[in-house]
Structure formats: structure tokens, C-alpha cells
Length: 160
Image (cartoon, rainbow, N blue to C red; front, side, top):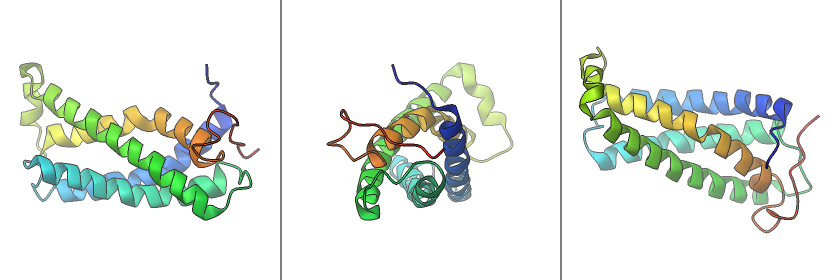
């Protein structure tokens, strides 16, 4: 079982939190344009927000959360992008599942909220929350720990 390094996870939450603010602000702004009714546009909006957040998260994580581990920045970027794309795929899966869940009669009250696309907005926020732990461990053990090849042979060093 993977132990959760509390201090590193706390730092990650701060850096990922900053990235999430960028991501969520962009997504919520674009959802205000009422494009969420089209599933392809909804996925594109989430992807655009994720890409903006990914850039912020990489810069902050590399600087404040994970030790350099002797890998060049360009190699870490490649690993980081691959992990972030898997995170995006998971987030899309969870977001669409939540949109379907929120379409059930039990959640009919969401349609009465005084905001546009309330189910889609809440689904996006829920998906972001669900993938946070996955993202931390994937970046810790892949992006900043030697890449995919070293996944099963080493661990990322976190900053003291």
C-alpha cells in the first residue's frame, strides 16, 4: 500500500490548487457561454481548462513539491504531460458519469439553481476532486521519479 507523505501532499494540494483555480475559472467562464449542451464542446472546454491548469501545476510542482531526481526538465515535462492526459481522461469519464447521475430525478433540483449549466458545472468540480489523489501519486511516481520505466523500481523524492 502506498503511504501518503503528508507534507508533500499538502504542498501538492497548494500547487494543484493554484492550477485548479486557473482550470476551473477558465472552464466555468466558458460554460457561462452556454456551450455545455453539446457533449463535444463540453469535453473541449474541460480539456482546455485542464491544459491551462497542467502548465501551472507542472511549474509549481517542479519548484515546490517534488525533488529534481536528476532528470532533465524536458523529460519531466513529457512524463508530466502523459500523466496529465491520463488524469484528463479520468476526469472526463467521471464528469460525464456525474452528468448522467445528475440527470436522475433525485437531482432534479439542480435545474432550479440560479446558474447556467448547474449539473455540468457541479460534475466538473466533482471530477476535479475525485482525481486529485490519483494525480498526486501518478506525478510522484512517474513524472518526477524517473518516468514510466522507473515506475516500479524507484520512488520520487519529495522536497524536505
